[in-house]
Image 1: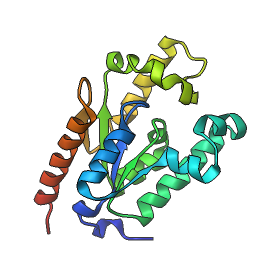
Image 2: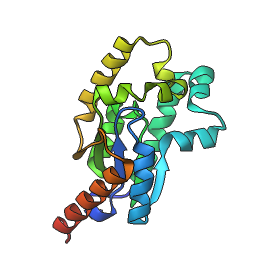
Image 3: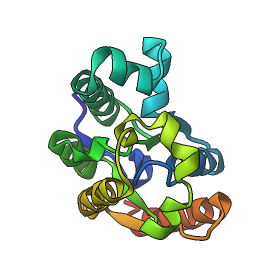
Image 4: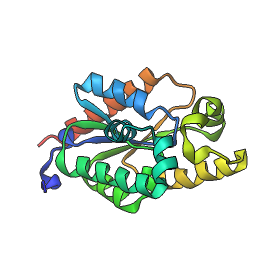
Length: 185
């Protein structure tokens, strides 16, 4: 296993966290392109490797199987890669081992969205988010708030309300460049 403490700040993986539908994939792809880094969407990698969608995996193999698989993918990336932009699934940061590993070895950026703004996206999200199926709006808000408290553990927070993905990505890139300059050896 690599000694991650020896990795310079500018070489660390950048991990994007936030509630489902906040734009982690879209924003992550923009950041990756600007920084000339590879982009990894954990959910997309799992779907590609298993040949099924996340909702199908939840249905056929169960959430526990998915969470275990998700953890293996994320831990592998944290331990064996550098210079990647990584989008985590909305629920993955709830796993303590994932949270701890990401905070230790990566730069974790929380893409924050308000409940009111998120609710406006619900119709676009619900079909492909099995964790939302059969939940009332109150139950969804409770899940939103529970996860938000977990997302509070991060290195940096970026507000996404009423902002275009390009604007958010630009802020992230600018913030990273300042951070890297401050931490040059």
